[in-house]
Length: 212
Ligand SMILES: *[C@@H]1O[C@H](CO)[C@@H](O)[C@H](O)[C@H]1NC(C)=O
Ligand SMILES: *[C@@H]1O[C@H](CO)[C@@H](O)[C@H](O)[C@H]1NC(C)=O
Image 1 (tube, helix red, strand yellow):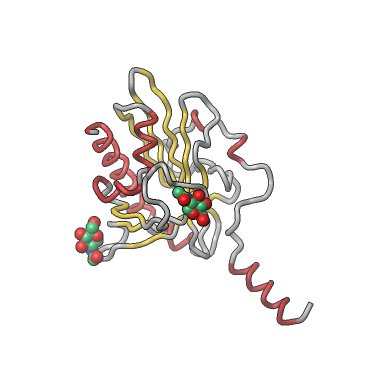
Image 2: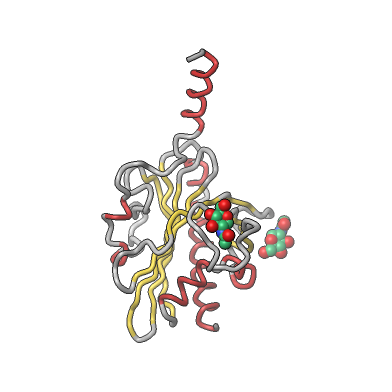
């Protein structure tokens, strides 16, 4: 191999350490997703479907009981076209041209840049994300979807888990675990705002779905 190619290979290993989903058996197959709850302390971290629990640095988490069926909650989480209507955190999601109906057209690997409000003062932020998991919960009455950050220098995945509580009620848990990566320390400084925005998003979802 020519020197130039070696240098190129070395640079891509350096620049993209966190990209590409791990090749070993995925943690999604060994975690009991239906049993997960937001930790009550500020240091515990929940695993994610593609990155597991190793090298987790911090997490944000929210959970709420919603007076609607798990399928209704899950569909609203994946109905990205309606985020403009109800979501005060992610106020818009850019979708590929061939995704015209959500949640029906959503697919694993779909790029989905998020437009977010309230993370930084005065400016709206965007975050490139990619759909990683649909219908990922093997337990009855449990639905799991996830997407991950697709920004170079970050490593984070955001699962949403909806479990059946009986009597037409659902428990919705939404969290994002951030793993060791070059930009993680910077994002960590925003943990307070991100946590507040996540909680508000959970409340917005509850209000929206319960009014459907
Ligand atoms: C849209 O395009 C992606 C990638 O080319 C493909 O995987 C997906 O099935 C397409 N979806 C629809 C609804 O055509
Ligand atoms: C940020 O987005 C909101 C929509 O939620 C919009 O009302 C506001 O004007 C935007 N702010 C900036 C600085 O672009």
